[in-house]
Structures are given as C-alpha cells and as structure tokens.
Image 1 (cartoon, rainbow, N blue to C red):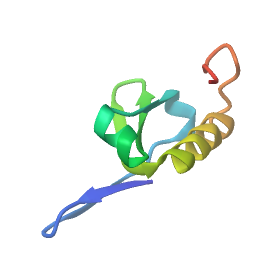
Image 2 (image 1 turned 90 degrees about the horizontal axis):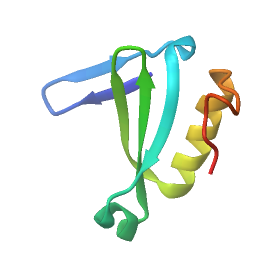
Image 3 (image 1 turned 180 degrees about the vertical axis):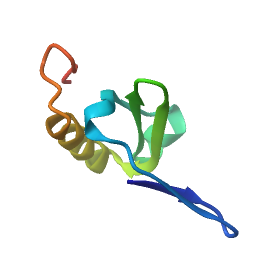
Image 4 (image 1 turned 90 degrees about the vertical axis):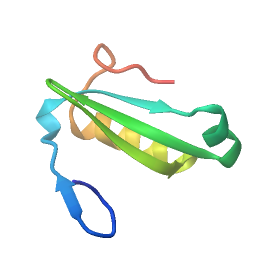
Length: 79
C-alpha cells in the first residue's frame, strides 16, 4: 500500500504484486547528496512513486518488491 496526501486529505493505493512490471531506484543530485532515493514502481498502466527513502531502505524495498512480485532475472535488472 502506498499512502500520500497533505494536511486536508489522506490517500492510499494498493498495487497488486502480480501487476508489477519493474521497479527502479532513482536519485537526482540533491537527493544523492542528502542520501535519499525514490522508487518508481511500474505497472501495466501507470507509474507509482515512493519518495524520501534512505538509500539503504530503497535498495531493500526494491529487492523485496522484486522478490514478492516474482520477477526473475530476465524481467528485472539487478545492480
């Protein structure tokens, strides 16, 4: 489940693991300097973002999503 929102609203989204096509970890220059990362989870029709993760948490979460969604080495690129 991915949650997002602001002071006035709270939203959540559940992504079925069977829909996950790939997971990317990204950092721009500022995020890299701060030790933060963003995950992009791509499904058949959309992209979902998890921002503000520590680099270590992003790597761990990316691996877990790949394992749980049963992507194999042909489907996923491992760094």
